[in-house]
Length: 295
Ligand code: GLN
Image (cartoon, rainbow, N blue to C red; front, top):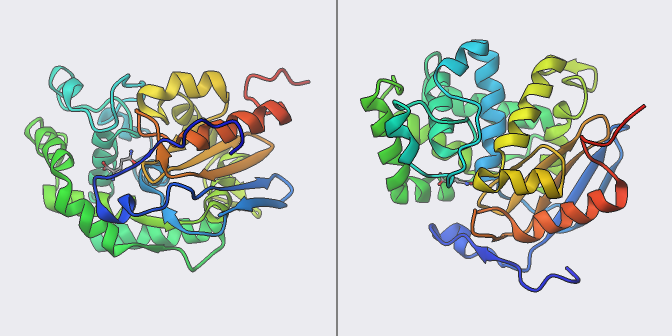
């Protein structure tokens, strides 16, 4: 991208992410009228990683409603995505569903009613339906690599189990979590899947969530979607967004557009460096912001 001094650093904790070329860049914008604008590598599937936490949260709220908030908070953590520090003083209750600990609890909640295979199937059906695209899949190589190297996540899950906030078998909960992280989607598919958050919770006349729930998921994305970088993202971009270490970001301009951007180089907080820059330029040019006075 013109004006960018560097592209950030590609995640290196697993080989399938480390081998993604840093030069990749894609952007897709789905407007409220259904029109799609795509550029660069917008059709290439990448590992959505923590962006899946948005879809997992939506499924868990659908399953247990507001009871979910007894087991996970909705405050920004101010810490890294895989941090364990707050869990001790906060009795195994993660700050929010968008850090790893919180998403692991969300998986455990889903497994309260489903077997791991069913929960993974439900997730796959959900994102396929949201995106209107049956070709979306889970990258088993990524899932396996996550499992083999996920010592921090294993520690987080066991630690929360010790506090009684993981009810199921740690291995099964993590297996589900790792498969969610391993969802592979293109910018176009991701932007399409985010449509339910830009309106009243409906997609193509079909209700996914209530309008109130869509607004609340957006609120959590705005305050917690970029870990300890969330305040900066809100300041610079002014839209709810969720990032993943694969370099993707899903952002929502309520009433206007669902946006997905992908560039695998990350900043120190594990968020796409160029992805954030691209979103910043997009909102500067369009004026899109949830803080824009209307009316
Ligand atoms: N698979 C990664 C992990 O669990 C996801 C983290 C992320 O995308 N920030 O560590």
